[in-house]
Length: 164
Image 1: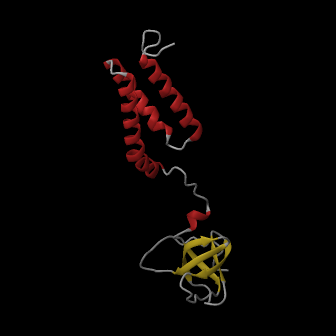
Image 2: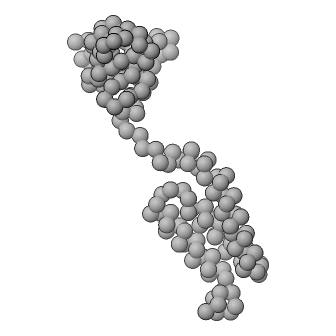
Image 3: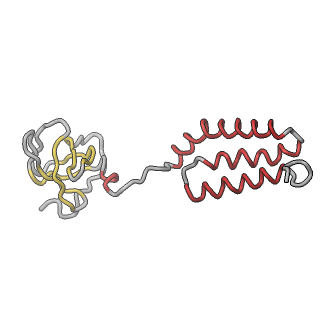
């Protein structure tokens, strides 16, 4: 059975490829094959212009490459595909209460959302008990903090029992 020679019109090949690539994208969610599906959909309409199959394939590959390399990074950035945020990620930038003094050589503790975290300062500076600090990042089970900048603002989320 030859495609485009009267047995099966060439546009049905492009329709089948559009469906094939779309189904693969549904199962992988990697924003890779969707661009091939879009290019195949464009080729469905271009195939009615009776362009030779070799040129259609070249046009399909060119459209796919342009979509893949130029629009995929933008789509990934906008849709935030591939990065799974955890609850810990939401703590970064929040203000916490120092419950045990933090020194250059000793880790202390901070309280945020009612939970006590072992903490150390980002720059090795000391933070006194009952002072405010800002969560810079989380490394394993340790919060890395810095002195809280009152001018910056932010939300104080140490917990309702933070004064204890």
